[in-house]
Image (cartoon, rainbow, N blue to C red; front, side, top):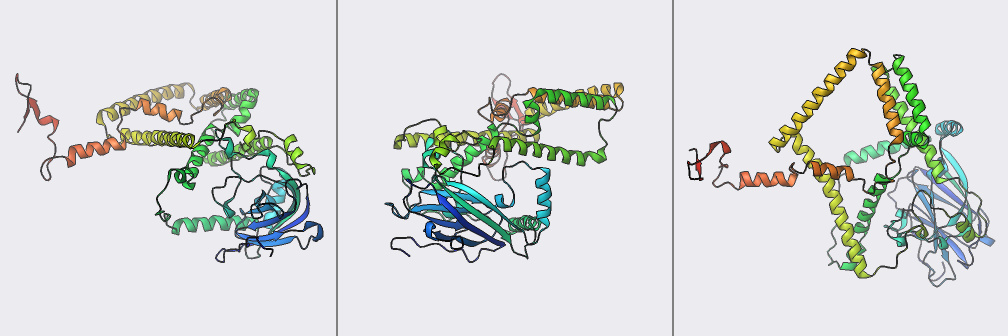
Length: 498
């Protein structure tokens, strides 16, 4: 190779192989002025190949085949500038999930697609191909290099975590083929095998901790530590999940409340027609249909949120990127985030401290709620448990009384069931969409902790144990019970019964 180029990596020998992926570079344009002389490094599961001199190479010379160990593999293409100052530093990346070759990711399922999938699933060996016209995206702050490089959502409070639209360039046409080995079988067999291998690995593997770093950490190394960044990102994932708009049936009802009213009328008609509730023997199928319907509606809504695919890209890639700019369903572009100057060391420390404080509060809310709930249910605090459980018994008796009256009025329960379903549909259509008004998804648990503030947490229970058991004087002795304590007449002193 040419002097100054880094060596290409090879695939790990212990990785299994279920098939192969073939990538052909059909055309390259629009890289200038970002890159004067582009060369590509293709990376699939750690195995790298180099593509260059595109004007003088045939399609066969620009076709590369890689072994793959799973359908969920992502093919990565990095662009380098052979005439740039930093020859071994990539200036752009292109990530291609191979599952999209087998099945269009993000598209809503349709009957023709399901029919094609059924036919495709029976094919042995399974093979598929797709032609892409992709742009090079800016490099991101990947938590792990190489095979773990993925596109990730940005932190809305940190514009530097997003990608810069001005870094988009080029237009590369690729043909990607995926083919499974004959022994792997069809696509269905491949997924079944993946589920089986995952179950076997989960039952046989043991959790191993990474070897500790013996070096003395500095403040800057802690702030830039991968585990710290991943922890902060995981907190953001939980917050995003908790504040995401509702999808599926609820969103379908809320988009047009007339749908909820129509469904409520149908429920009332079924109820007064003695068709509700359905027989118990058919409930599993009805629940399955409800899950499938919710999933299909969510898939259609996701396809609407993601928008259509744009397979043809103009040669002026930068202008195309600006013209197609939109916020999208996920925060990924720095231009769509709140502007903020580059942080100083003091600001980084403050942000780190704030993030750790937020992590501490959120984890405390969840842990305290679970511990207090367990304490109430197990009589860790006898007066409180007796009060709460007695209140629950009173509520249960009232509900039984109400249901008994309903059973007298409506012996079959059909009318009551239809009315209950109708009320639920109308209420669901007018309930605030989750995430649009509430910034803290743990707010209900926080309220519950306030209400159950007198219930002991695990820390309180440990405190009780040490105070009433281990702290007692003498081996095997115990604290004097309250039943044996009396007050001396007129003295106010505590006197043991014995």
